[in-house]
Length: 573
Ligand SMILES: *[C@@H]1O[C@H](CO)[C@@H](O)[C@H](O)[C@H]1NC(C)=O
Ligand SMILES: *[C@@H]1O[C@H](CO)[C@@H](O)[C@H](O)[C@H]1NC(C)=O
Ligand SMILES: *[C@@H]1O[C@H](CO)[C@@H](O)[C@H](O)[C@H]1NC(C)=O
Ligand SMILES: *[C@@H]1O[C@H](CO)[C@@H](O)[C@H](O)[C@H]1NC(C)=O
Ligand SMILES: *[C@@H]1O[C@H](CO)[C@@H](O)[C@H](O)[C@H]1NC(C)=O
Ligand SMILES: *[C@@H]1O[C@H](CO)[C@@H](O)[C@H](O)[C@H]1NC(C)=O
Ligand SMILES: *[C@@H]1O[C@H](CO)[C@@H](O)[C@H](O)[C@H]1NC(C)=O
Ligand SMILES: *[C@@H]1O[C@H](CO)[C@@H](O)[C@H](O)[C@H]1NC(C)=O
Ligand SMILES: *[C@@H]1O[C@H](CO)[C@@H](O)[C@H](O)[C@H]1NC(C)=O
Ligand SMILES: *[C@@H]1O[C@H](CO)[C@@H](O)[C@H](O)[C@H]1NC(C)=O
Image (tube, rainbow, N blue to C red; front, side):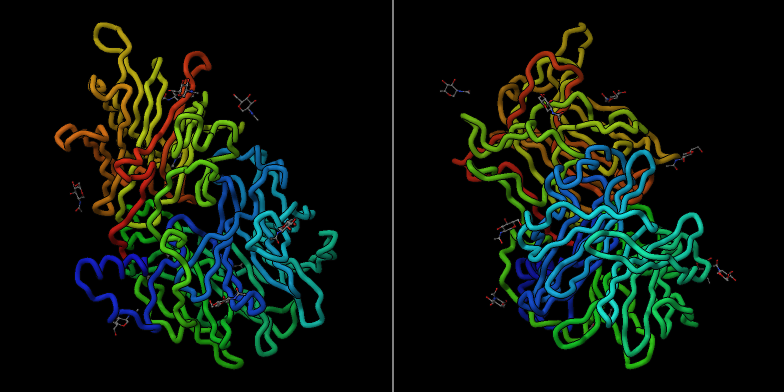
């Protein structure tokens, strides 16, 4: 995004320097699937801003991002990074399950992340994680499991130091609150706060105290184009809460903005006392057709005068901020959430923090730099394919590893060494939104006319998650003789926002050997995966445990490229 634009302009036009003012910044600040943001500013942590977003079914979960300038952000830890912290995560495997709607807060030297875990049996658990230093991933330990007050938990400390849990009571669809003991997780008597303005589907309540008023803000209207943010306030924490007469305070409903579905607000102040808001939005335009990255986190300055209600600007890609904190250039490009990503799995390294699994993985299926294959990641095939058994309430371990699509236009390459030994054995790359919605380019095998099993290049569009879309047949081509036993480069890129271009080529070959396929971004937009955003990378599956298991991806260091290379050349605002 921001750095991206500078990079792009400086290459193409040489304008970079003239655009660098503190007044302008670019959204989304946390590009790619990063919904339901909750952010804080911590002066004691060297004036650092921290944010978390919903991670749902992916593992590791509950990302914490940090920034000192609100513009360059780094993923610093995943709160849930070890299944021993919360063994129930082994059960989540389908969209809409897992961790959802967290609140991040800092109080008296401690960081608190409270979140909800949705299990396949419909059970909902409220969890509170604590840490003294979010930069230290292992400092996040096991959560406190609380009796559940309601969905979308929020934590608030009043001036006397007492703490409160605010949540949504379902199916009443009301905001309720109770005092909570943060050492035991027990809460006292609950009471009603508010029922919103009639938009329905209340989400993400937060309490903020300012100038003697308690402000309660909630999202209403659901996560689609009707999404909006409303507010009420009271002079007493337990109400009565009087709604703002100009609600919604923030929304892109009925607008032609490119950033749509704006809502799910959190508010914080910087070192100078300036207010900022974060919310999620889709880069979809009102036509709401292609937005594979799903809900992303955007930032905006907030005008909040003494005793008044806050005022919000429209959320856009190019924002004219009030004064942002000074721009820092401390982060290296590859450490930024929107940076260029080259991963070569060097010996002794571990799998980078931003790589994700869909559901809890079998860790033994992933080996960094195995013997004789340094600078590569070995995947052991799983029985379950990417689609799995639709609707299954049983966790299915897919061997698959992903990163988020973070830019509208990008290119992603993977070099793969894989020879299928039997039919249905497959390894390759995918653009994946949900088990029902993915686009795959793989090396596998098929039966030819003579009935013999031959290695093949397979392109598949899986779009069971959306009604009314055609499901084109799977395409396959026999793998050229020269490609067998050789590393093949699989690539996916987006040169416009509606289409992904997939290609395969022998690493050493000329472009004329290339195979090219096109897939629609609409397949990986909304539908069953409506809470999610596109992920891509590679997967390896086989239907039985007979035969060979290993797939190797190997970089050729002499040619100086890496195993995986994600780069972008533009983003859309
Ligand atoms: C605090 O932040 C400043 C500015 O980014 C940096 O120069 C300094 O090294 C940081 N100090 C610590 C203790 O991290
Ligand atoms: C990180 O947290 C773990 C667990 O609390 C602790 O053992 C370790 O010393 C911490 N590391 C640092 C650098 O603070
Ligand atoms: C909220 O509660 C009030 C008082 O019970 C009721 O009159 C109103 O219709 C409710 N509003 C919504 C949106 O449910
Ligand atoms: C604005 O959008 C809402 C929700 O989509 C709809 O109910 C309402 O009629 C729209 N209003 C106008 C003026 O278009
Ligand atoms: C930001 O400022 C530029 C230049 O003044 C202007 O063209 C643009 O419309 C402004 N954007 C917003 C969101 O106000
Ligand atoms: C992980 O895979 C290994 C090898 O197939 C298997 O022995 C082990 O039981 C699996 N672990 C889990 C938790 O499924
Ligand atoms: C590694 O390579 C050496 C030399 O080519 C060979 O002898 C050995 O069997 C290989 N080991 C593995 C695990 O493939
Ligand atoms: C994926 O697995 C499911 C469940 O076993 C199976 O029904 C489906 O045919 C498989 N899909 C492919 C493309 O192999
Ligand atoms: C598809 O249609 C069926 C039957 O009308 C419905 O139950 C299902 O929810 C629809 N799925 C989606 C993703 O719209
Ligand atoms: C997007 O790119 C595809 C593939 O090159 C092309 O067929 C399609 O027309 C393009 N769409 C737009 C809106 O430019």
